Length: 104
Image (cartoon, rainbow, N blue to C red; front, side, top):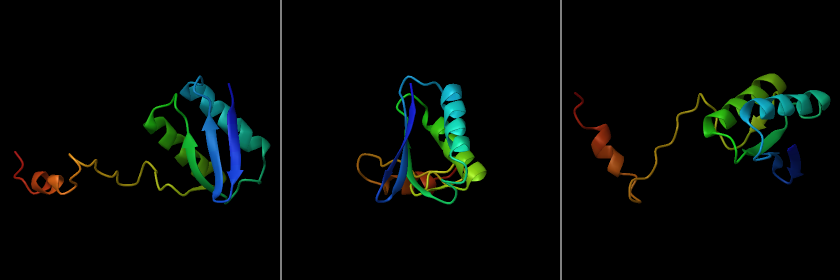
């Protein structure tokens, strides 16, 4: 049960063990960043791999780290960003008809 931070040429990535629930992951992640002092301040992160967490929980953790420690996530997935629409049957234009339809 661990959280690893790996460095690579594009920045750092966070790997959260699949067995950790959200509250434990949050606690361990904040503890790891607190122990690091100013080391990660202003650094670039390429993402968070957390197979045991919901996507909304991962977004929350990213936003928390950005606000608390000034790190930057290159993925652009922040909870205040506009979510991208899924592609319907391989055709992104399929949403155009829905977006322009009269609403009830």
